Structure formats: structure tokens, C-alpha cells
Image 1: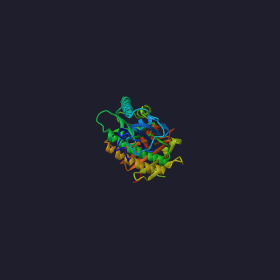
Image 2 (image 1 turned 90 degrees about the horizontal axis):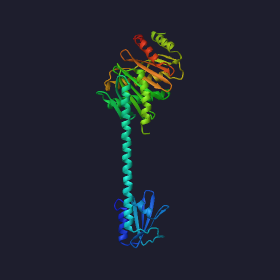
Image 3 (image 1 turned 135 degrees about the vertical axis):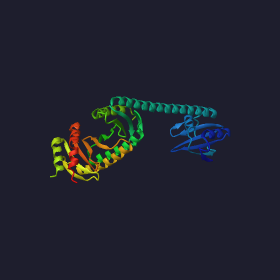
Image 4 (image 1 turned 180 degrees about the vertical axis):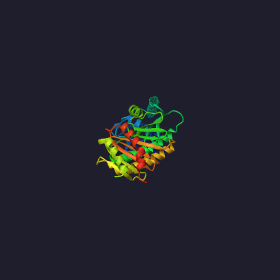
Length: 240
Length: 123
């Protein structure tokens, strides 16, 4: 008998073989790994997976949801390593799987909390930055894909469009400077009729800090200095 | 020597050894006047490549409603590269200086010469 674990779970295979009182060898393949379970007189008598033997093998294979199996009846076990009854094995296996799931859920929750906390910290830093730049309009931490991961604006400002457009320009500046072999770009300033738009790499150059300020009110030297200071602070707050 | 060349030479004298190169460039990327002090800095390549940057900068500024572009400043590990549109925007002026240059001074100098350079472009 052969089949796929999508059609019949390991727990069902154990239950059927034990209830039928079969003497058999069940081979289960999961990727590169293969386990062998031996049944005799309505119990699991032995299990082996690589160097591992006994109950622990059963608990591991109960967690396999993908793979193939083949059952050969009449094959006897080379030894006895399991004394627990089959219902006991399945109950302990289920308990361990639940425990592992809770652990994974907890890890995911912790990761989510860390991401939220990081995003909050970046937003706070950008808010603090806004108080130190004269004529502040907006600031953002942006990935080189043009998407902002944190931002702070004062008044109506299309931060999403600015992030996308400035990334496009910053990429061209980088390519240009690369070709000129003038070393790496540290920052780039665009002066328009209305605004200073400054972008500066964070320590991971997949991200940059972008600041926009009202040209009539801003002080360019101050803006560059603050961008240097906050690029460092933001770099430290990033989860690299 | 044309008036434009004279003006760029004046700029070179004012910036001294900090100057890498200065060019007046059409938006087609062709330099019409150039003074270079650094043999390792490929001024004509820089002129052509920054023409693309200036063109895109103009488009970007329009799309984000920030008015016309006046200038750009690129800071690299070795140099400051300043570009500034002249007159009606059909030409731009590029000044590349070493990191030892006083940036504020370079910007002031560009403010001082920008109109003269625009007027000196042969028509």
C-alpha cells in the first residue's frame, strides 16, 4: 500500500494499523528524510529516523504534513524501542504539536510587536526631527523601492508621491556618480522654487532619510546637519 | 578666448585647488565651455550624465508641485557636485569641487556668477 500524506495523515495511518493488529513496516518520506515505523500486535513497536530511535521519532513524524508513505505487511521489527500504547503516543504527539504551535504564534506576535515598536520609534524620531528643521514640511524613511516605512508631515503634503519621485531621482544620481567613479553618494539636495528636498542614506543603503523644507524659511546648513544626526539615529533604530 | 571661458577661468581662480571642473552644458548634455583642474575627473562624462539628472529633476519637481528646479547638490565621498539651471533652463552650469572646499562659499560664488554666465552664452 502506498499513498500521500495529503490524503492520509500519519496519525490515521498509525491508528488504522494498530486497530487492525497488523505486523507491518511503514516507511514515510518527507523531503530528504525517511522514517520507518514497525507495527506488531496492535502497537507501534519500533521507530527509526536517521540516528534517532523510539518514541521521539513518532512525535516528529506526526508533525509531517507533506510526503509519501508505503506500507509493507508481514515485515517484523528488528528491535523493540517503544513501550507506550498507540493512543498514548498519539495523545503525547498532539500535545507537543499544540505546544509547538503556541510557541510559533508567540514568536510571530513578538515579531509583530517588535516591528510595531520599531515603526513607532522611527515615527517619533521623525517628529523630533521636524522640530529642529526650520520651515519643516515633511520627513520620511524610504526604501530604495520608493516605498516609505515611516513618515511625518506638517500640513497637506503628498508624501507617497515625493517618496516615489525622489527615489527615482536618487537612483539616477547614484548611477551617474558610480559611472564617474567619484566614490559613493552620501546625500543629494534638490532646490526648487518652493522647497529644499534633501535625501541622505541610512547606514544600510537600501534606505534613505528624505527631508522637505520650505525654501523661504529653511536654513540649508542646519538642514544638512540635522539630516546627518538623524540619519545616524534612524539607522540605529532600524531592525537590521 | 570667449567671455564664457574668461568667466569660468575667474571661477577657477577663486576656487583654487579645490576645483575639479566647471562646465556650462546644454540640456542635450554637450558642454559649450569647460575648465578642468583634475585629470582624473572626466568632466565631459559628468556634464553629459548630469544633464540627465537635471532633466529628471525638472520632471520630478513638476510632479510633486514644488515649482521649477533651481539647483542640485550631490555629496559623494570625494566631491561636491553642484549643478544650476541658467536663464531659461536650456543650459546648466556644473561645478565639481573637492570635499575640502567650503560649500557655502561655492554656492555664493555660483550665485554671483550665474547671471553673467547666462548672458555670456553665445547666441
